[in-house]
Length: 384
Image (cartoon, rainbow, N blue to C red):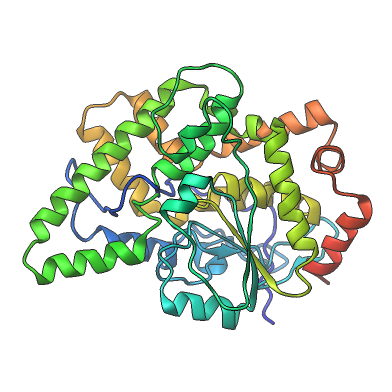
């Protein structure tokens, strides 16, 4: 088993973005107002070839956190990576190949499924999406893999429908930001999340001589996605999106279910995902790495790594927003919602410390983990 040692103190990756969406079905690599027909291949390469800026190895020989270092190399699934190699505060290392996080799996190719079930010995998938998202883009059936629905967004709330791409409400209560995290995760999601289907569709269009029509369709989808993200940005204080998820009892219950799966995995790999693999799945990774004893800086750098995985796509979205004449504030909202904003997660972590005492207290008192269970997680997923 190869182990990558990744230290804290690695330079943060610039915000660039993970797009995907239940509402749209095309990828794009647009460089101005129109989306190019070659978008799917650009997004695919972003998931496996694009890298974060590499920092020099430190004096102990640890390497930078990069796309190449964390990618699990799936062809049809965006933001597909693992947590192996991160170093804890007591010097242990997260085991390689057991903890996998991705965007939606509906675009997985047969080669992806073979890799997950074979090379990674996948045993469990935790789907953190809403009912509507799951119905529109169901996960593929994989032999020997148990799927568990870990609902993070409370769909019974007035704004729960935002998670499936509905237009944003101006309701100012705290649930708005929680729904925004889901909405940002899902409303931008077919731009990246359905890579395999988009790629095959683009190829078919080219073969039939209809590539121009396909490009027009992609451009329209991209413009719609940008407009929706701008609307979300107008509806709430985006910086509170993860704070509201942290405080939500429904979210806490969903993450408790996620931890139950991890505790019962018995040596099998666990994969968790939402639609774009960045907000709901991202907070799940933050909580898990915290329980394992990884330091805050490394946790935030892993969270921010989403942006490097989908750099080309976020650039396309920003360029569309610029070409359409949106304000700088709106363009920043597109960047923050299409990708991730590290400061928003920092705010959530500060909120946990200020409101609940510490991350440990939050995991014990709100998520419901016992000290024995935390020790068990560390025993299962760490090595010397």
